[in-house]
Length: 85
Length: 85
DNA sequence: TATAATTAACCCAAATTTGGGTTAAGGTTT
DNA sequence: AAACCTTAACCCAAATTTGGGTTAATTATA
Image 1: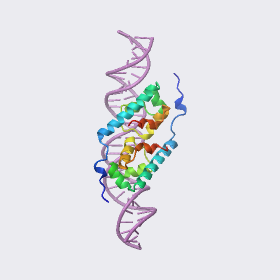
Image 2: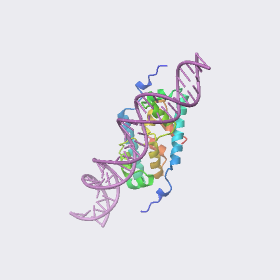
Image 3: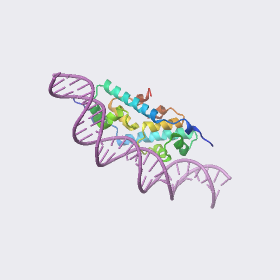
Image 4: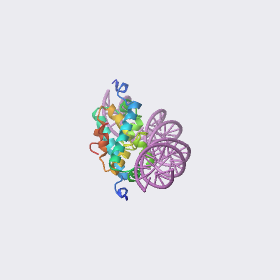
């Protein structure tokens, strides 16, 4: 069976970055809505403050688990992070 | 301001593993429904066959980007991976 | 203004993830 | 049974992510 899907349907680096930026922006929005600092979100989610900042800035590929931890700390449904992706 | 949320609302290792197992199971389900091999999913998503296997087995913390790549290759809405989490 | 609080930007090392290669195991087909 | 396909299970090295520490920059508050 010949398969061609690899020719077109892959994420480009630019698309990746866009997604990570949007995700981070969304995390920051929710955090600020709740009036929580990065530092408190970090301790609550048991993720380092450095990493929380990096996630909000979309600098690295965040794992699903980290997003869930953050959502928990924000008392937020993590699925909603993906709503407008 | 005194904050107590860190006392209770964190993911345990066991919960993490459960989530990763469920996620992997779901990926495998969709892949098998589509009748695609791990190898083809790997080449289509531009993720190594090793990593695809590990993700399906829930062995490592998969990144959001990887899940999106996999979903794309499966012609699937990645948000649905989280439906029954 | 100045002081404090928050976030960004670094460096560095440790930990984790990822890919490539190989072999074994399980299942299917001939 | 043999050959084949698919997945698991390894090892290893490379790449990436993560955390800790520090300092600078930015923003808010007194």
